[in-house]
Image 1 (spheres, rainbow, N blue to C red):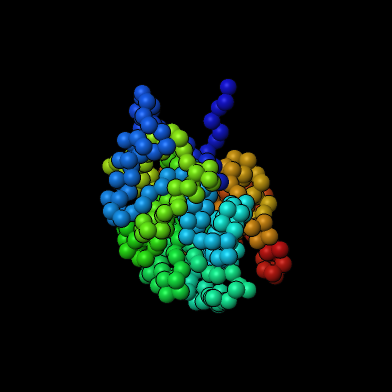
Image 2: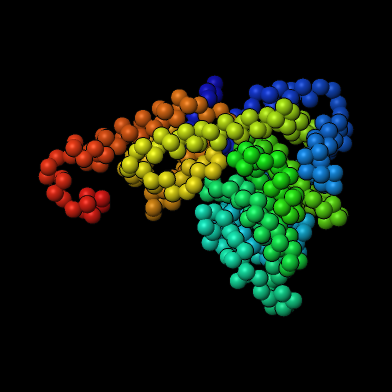
Length: 372
């Protein structure tokens, strides 16, 4: 018998499915409907997306986030094009080269600032237009929320869109955690996507309570003449699509997406607050959504992972990533932080935060030596 494993802070992918989403899938599991999206659940879900993003929005459902990004980029590029993104972008780091394989395009990764790229960072790469020896820049791709847990403000997105459009390029947004961004910005989805000039959006829900399925949204339907064929050829056309449509209907009903994202964001802020009381740990990025990046004493990482699993982000710097989810509880965060404090006491006995508790001999040792 398989038993549920202990919850941790490794990824919001590790959480289960929200009960209301599961219930919606069960309700959709009645009788026969036409496959491949020609069913009432899928069609109604498409209409909801149009209500939220605009009537001209073209909607294509796919299996997962990588599929969403590949379909987005494949639709608007040819193999001689290039795609500009952050070095930390999911399409660069975590999709096993799928965007490059399926588009044939060259990725041009840029070192970001707090996970974000800016027009100033991008402009040096806008070269070689109409020169046949260079790949032709065609897409700027950003993540919202970024892979470093930070969020693009609307003005930043507008500036990127203006730069892209000025150079006959497109702006793509990887919205795997777009609901967390919307809650943090206190905005409707449209306000920081369509209204800011985003051309294509990968809209994710699996990190926020859904089981599977993402949506690719094109805000100019004239771009999508070949999209349905690309989706089929890239193995992203789901025959029983009603189960994706049913999930999105539950996700949007009564703003469930907002409730779940708001909770995971709040849990991250609570974790940030409690961790800030531990001087041996340094938070390295602004906590804008549901991710925390921190430098942690290397010696406590392994024993800490045994109780609450998480990933090491940068082994050299001893930087870790902690993600909260829609089902993270305050009690789990309290227990996690208390365990950190206990491990610091037992594994790092000379790293006491209270100077009065340190032996006299240790106080006389230069700080540069004690920190090694």
